[in-house]
Length: 353
Image: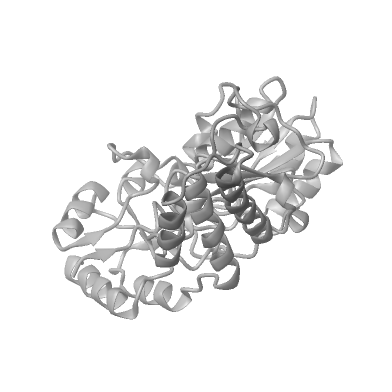
């Protein structure tokens, strides 16, 4: 049996999503054209815009489609390039590498943002942009975005959240989070790779990252990926109606871990789809190869750092030493994970102990 437990890197595309994308790819028409075929493409695009807006409690006109979460994150950073930018020490590489001169705020050993340190920094100097992920992609820890945003507002800061790992796992509301920008990526919640969105607070109008035509209300130039966007829209619709609740699977995986291993951020609020564990005396690189030989697909962290197995900057920020950080494995479940697969994974874990 081939076992896929790397849904945090990319999840399986839902069959209904594939069908709606195939239908869109079977039709001709540029969404910017005024003839019948163009209007049909435009209708599919705007339907998806409504669906994505519903997922995050926003308005359709505030959804800007992108090539994914990385572009959405970079768009926000680019729009605030001339102002101070604060980020947490555990952000995704698309934030940490998105602009030089970022200032990082520490996290607690629990993997949660240090709100006291943030509050102290926000009170100093010129206001700018605060960017904070909602769910960490390596540990699954849910970050206190609403509390951070409240503090930021008191000092005149603009707020962005990278909600890529949160969509489809926990409720999302632009209003409740009180953020100005929110990033999404379709392939994390059953949609296709290569399409995402940046959702704006009404009144926000960041300068375009890509220049050219007038697509996306002149916020993002380039012919829209209608098929991908249609797929993202349907995936968002399903994610809103059928959020993933894999607590039972998570508990079974964690109970199977060998004596001496530790679940990262175990005492913090986490999504039910991600378990990261350190295996003292082991190396993630060797363990990944062993699991792969048994037909089990895992990761040691973000797939965006593929090609290298180094110490996780997330675990380092949580005060794990290098040896432990190099032993960390991430198990992540998805919308189509079955009990039979989890049982097989549990058996594989126990065989590796």
